[in-house]
Length: 296
View 1 (cartoon, one colour):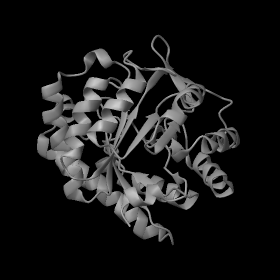
View 2 (cartoon, rainbow, N blue to C red):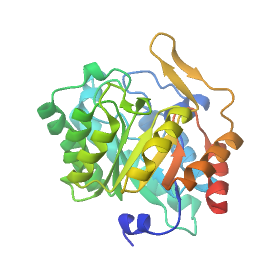
View 3 (cartoon, rainbow, N blue to C red):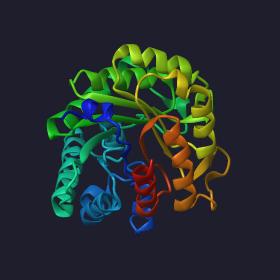
View 4 (tube, rainbow, N blue to C red):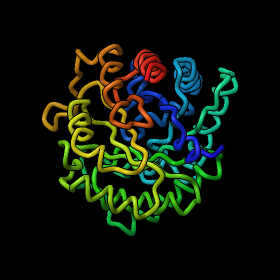
């Protein structure tokens, strides 16, 4: 069965939760510019452990720790293109090893993560379209060569770079999910309309459409407004908080695993096919989401 065929079935798929903030919670340095990527060689055992914990919590999809394994980011850290390529391969190998170690009886899909080339919360830093296509094609080819099942383009903050990343990913022949961060229920972080982005990317041939790295209230507003208009499979994975431009990351203390479980039950009725966790979530959130999906 292919991943698109899986999405055509009745089952709601559970995506894993956060990697970067979970590494931090477990005592790992996630300093910029590499964020979670340095753990691939400094703390690979903890990356493996996190993947394994998400599988045991019920995740059907495990995301590679490749959010920041692009050439641009590695060069900022004084590293090379070859270093970025090796980190990407290592990240995929760690997911494969975790699947083998956990030995689940169900199929586990490997999502190859691609992110904005600059800071997720600063769309004004995004490169021009041609540069973005060139750089994203390299990353997408590494993910495809290393054996992911599909490419998950995450936390896109503008339509322009999302289009570049999507076309680059589709050139591999793999299924592609494109996911945006929203500033409100109608707009991507940079102000581009989300409904227009969906229409254009559907025409490009993406497999599913997604919202992530966004507070659950905004995602709920988006689903209330657009879920009945969207024909592609929908995915959503919320933050356990939100990002304030002046104050930085702000945790939402009320976003407990049980609360997210209740939210997920509502989203399931609105047609969500994939649900997981983003920044601040952990295996307990995923366990409760798995329980919600089983009840749906």
